[in-house]
Each structure stands twice: as C-alpha cells, then as structure tokens.
Image (cartoon, rainbow, N blue to C red; front, side):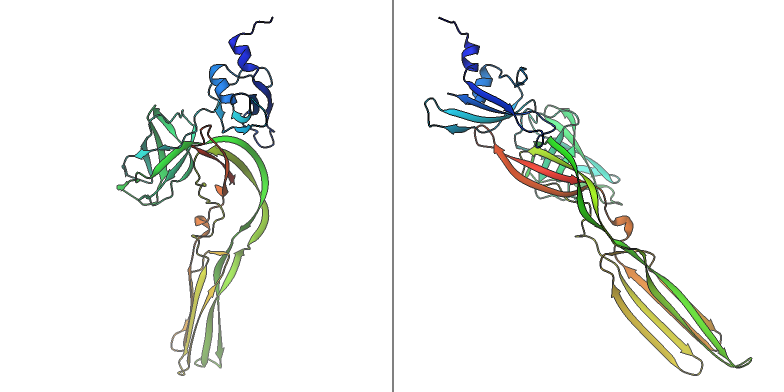
Length: 349
C-alpha cells in the first residue's frame, strides 16, 4: 500500500487550478482553484498550493470568498486567488492637523497594521473635511513605520498658515493595480474668445466743418472648439473602498464659460448723442483677451468710445490631464464574507 505524507494528502484535495485571462488581469497573477472537502485557502494555510507553472503560491496570496457545490459528498469549492498582494482590508485612519505655509501640506496619517510599503498606492476615503481641495482617491503615500504613513495634498494657491483637519470618518485600503491598457475616448477641447476694436471718422467741409466718428468692439474666436478621440491610459485597481477617484480632466462642473458685456457711446458737438449696450454668452468658450477699450475724438467736434468686459474661466484654469473617468464595480468578497472588494477603473490623460 502506498504511503502518503500529510502534504500529499492535502494537495490531493486540489482538483484543478488555472490562470485567469491576462485580458482582464495583466498586472497580477490570478488563479482559479477547485478543491474537494475544504476551500483552497484553508489548504494553503497548511501547505502551500502550487500554481500551473509548478511554483508555490505565495504566502501573501489574497483569497476571495469560495463558492460551494454540494451535489456530491465531500463538497467541492471554487475560489479565486491573487498571488503576492497581501492584506486588502478596509481600515479606519486618523489624520493629524497640519499647518500649511505655502500650497502643500504633508498630512501625518496613523493606521495600525496598514501593511503598506514605500510607494504603495492607497485609496483614502475621507468623510467630512475642512480641506479646500478634494483629497479622496488613489494617492502615492510614503511609509513612515508599521503604524504611520504620510500623504501630501495641494491646496488652493495663496493659502498661508491655515490649519486643515479631517474628521474620524476616514478609511484607507491598499489599491493594487491589476490591469492596464490604452484606449481612445471622446473629448471636447473648449474654444477661446477674445475681443478686438476698430474706429472710423469723417470730416465734412473745409477747416472748421463738421466731423463725426464711431468706435466698435467686437468678439473674435481665437481658438475653435475641437471634438476628437484622445488616447488615454486605463488603469484598473483592486480596492476595499467604494469611492471613485475624483474626475478632474475635461470636467466643466466648475468652469464658467465666457460672457462679454459690450457698451458704446457717441456724442457730436451739434448736440446729437447715442448709446448702446449688449451682453453675449459664449458656451463652450473660455475667456481670452476680452477686456478692450476703443475710442476716437476730435476736440470740440465729437467723441466716441466702445468697451468690452469679459467674465469667465481662462484657458490656464481648464484641466486637460489627470483622471477623466472613474468607475467602481463590485468584484468579490473576502473569505469570511465580511469585506467587499471593488474594481476601480480610472481613465487617465
């Protein structure tokens, strides 16, 4: 009779193992295990499982909740495992206040057992906050020690010596890049509108005759709007948090498109006078060099002037780079069913 070691008996419980397609998980190794009698994570805790290429599955592999087939006894289990990414728990964090001297602030964040190493990515989900910029999303952090890491934010320009605090309603999770590819996305570059001015005058008769003139300011499109497909980098992260990354590229929510107020007046020595005013909105266009004054006059004869004043966001305030789209999709749960994992898809320009 053949003699089996304890390890061989446990490994015999693995019915199959196959890698998942790299079309969905190009940046990590993901395996689908089928086992009999016990979930593969339980077997792996006693004896390392083997991957399809014959190497041992890492002790830091992340297993997901198993599905069970009870049609036969003993039951069979199907379970996914991602090799070598470690803990992916949702952890409460505390954040110390920080005095801001210029436009950046390094925030000291405490999270016992965060499991992060230098240059890891972390999802930071922050609730009520007095930050004047949005610090949520995926951020590169710096490990201080086993219980602390730091996170640097950028605040509004001109801020000085302000104190920023975050409430206790804050959580973090390591964010693991599992897939990456490039694709094309439809975008619209806004246009730019400016103003120019002209004058004209006429003299009737010889010296001492009558004279009149006009001044006009008019809008001019200096950059047309442009619709096209732009290449973007799509990154998919595994995370335990359900908040998407803030979308900043090509977002019009906080953009005020240009509006221009025009006014003009003319007066003639004979006593005639006229005035006119109008207002026009240029949706989809940013404010260029719109503030113009055009005038012409002849002493004792006439005077004419035209003025344009524009309002709105300027081209320098429009954001063309960064996260364009971010979407959260439920993926799977932890082995005990207590932690929901998500796939976060970020499109980045």
